[in-house]
Length: 237
Length: 237
Image 1 (cartoon, rainbow over the protein chains, first blue to last red):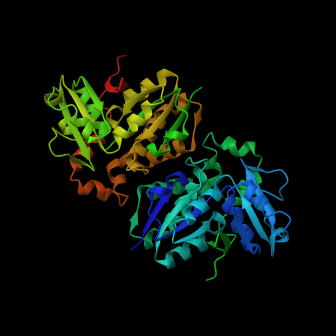
Image 2: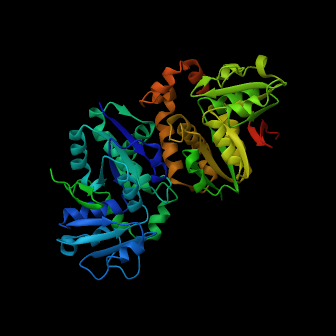
Image 3: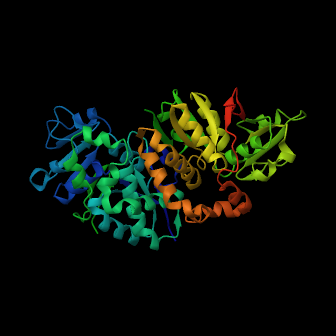
């Protein structure tokens, strides 16, 4: 039977053998939530790139350019990673080139070695979990974290996935046990739980409360974004 | 007011500014528990060294040599890191040279930059916590982890310290919130909680159940081991 592991930050990814694992990249606030929402709303593809400069390479073409640094839209770009920029009206039929502080980095690192890389968020929690169970592969839940440190929101989501998968997997690492119990502690009021940390000021300073509330909704999407040839596209079942 | 941070593995220590922090090194099973117990029982000093070879440099002298790798005593050494080797009878008046898989590494890394480095374990939880409150300095709780990965036992102890310190500190990072809630979930049955992970087999294979039980006892020691000139000695109040 398969194992579940949780890696709390991309800075630790080298410690994990992921060649035979499906890696779920998690950046709840807000990259992977917006990626999920965008593909659900008809975006053709989302291309994650590392630097703002890489993003610029796609200018003067038919792409939507999205760049976020430290939680804010980079000047001169169409938008950042607020989910409200990823509505059907804005993204249907388009390809989006996106760079974000933490999420893109996690995606790029994962794709170097993983068997497969997909994207998770509370928005697609249930469909993602059901799909993972069916694959019969090892799963590594990779939290994008905050500047390589542990963060609560990504860890809570990892715990939510562990909670749904655990009856179908035989092995769990210490981090997956911790993540699940955090999720069980927090699940009645995810938003309230995030206030417990002093780092919640990081969110408040960005004035993104509506985004946070949006990203903590469960199961409003069924799409599973999968990374193929460096582009995120909807997984075809 | 001061801040509390938790670093779940030495592999992430570079991310933290610790020049003005007291770093508490935590390796519950079993290095920092045995260090605490040994100094409580009259050992003059414990010298942590990185490699078994460094340990050998002290041979043919008046030191007790302790070397552990992957949970077992290295052949040719007096003992490893079982707390039962650190009784008054064995260590009183002696200086011990010790290398362990995870704990020594965390100590060495911390002392490169920290304002002060001390050692924590459930054995000295209360005296350590009371002392930390009195210092009015930032505190970083550094989990030794398991081969640079997150582990439950060190994180639970970090959470126990956060729980005791939090009313006297103003800032908490996400990791300290998580650690405290894990501790609150587990505290009624710490040993049972450690069984939740598949990694508990790591402990069982080592046949150290008595050691584990011993290391999970709270407050049987009052000593606070502090690192001074690369030696752990009892803190003088």
